[in-house]
Structure formats: C-alpha cells, structure tokens
Image (tube, rainbow, N blue to C red; front, side, top):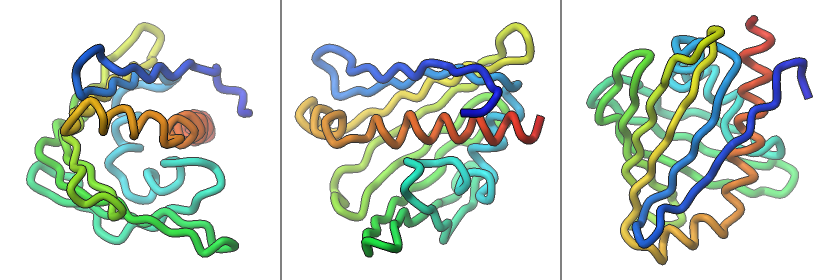
Length: 164
C-alpha cells in the first residue's frame, strides 16, 4: 500500500430500492479525482481489480459522449466488455452516465457520481447506481463487484499520491 491514507469504501444497498450507493474519500482535491475519472489514460490505470488489465476502445468524456472498455486477464483468456454513454459531464462536480456489461446487455444502469470538496484539499465521491430491479441489484452486489471497487480505489489512491 502507498503512503496515502487508507480511506474506507462504503457500498450500500438502499432498502427496497434498486439502488447501490458507493461513497469514498480521497486525499486529493475534486479536480484531480475528477480528472482520473474522465482521462482515459488515467482511468485505465486504476479501474477494477489488480488482476485485470483495462483497454479503452472508445472514450469521449463529455455531455453526450460515449465510452467502452475491455477488462481482461491474458494468462486466463478472460475478457469482458463494458460500455455506456455520458449523459452529463460537469467538470470537477458531477458525471451522469449509463453503464452496461456485454454479458448482460439488457442490464443497463444509470449512474450519478458527485465530487465534493472536503477540508484539507480532500474529496468525497458519492456514486449512485439505479438498476432495473432489487433482484438485479442483489445479483450485482453478490457478483464480487466489491473487489473491483475496493482494489480500484486503492489503485486510484496510489495514482493520486504518485502525482502528488
């Protein structure tokens, strides 16, 4: 682990709603955390679990833009694709996008992420994902997605600390 402070990631299912909320703080200001979410080279360095490599194939991080990337493990031949559209990109404040997985093309979610300035040059992000049903929400939560979220944010901590 890097010298950066370890920040806890909270992954919550909202009771009786098809909603997942992820909250995380970072030891960097909103502008830097936001940049790591919209710059394809930076995004590919931190998203997902440590065992996965990410290749960006389409990335137009602007209101009305689209995105697509593939996550893979070469030694296993494992590969999966993710894609969506950017509905709103408000610099340093908010990203609203759709999120789909090639393995479940009918399972689109609507995701909103906010970037909140905290004292000491820090940032809190809150990501809210709305899916089709509580059952789908529960399948997503039990899929192991927490590993990718937690390890990804640890990698983002390291990236932000290195850029100092």
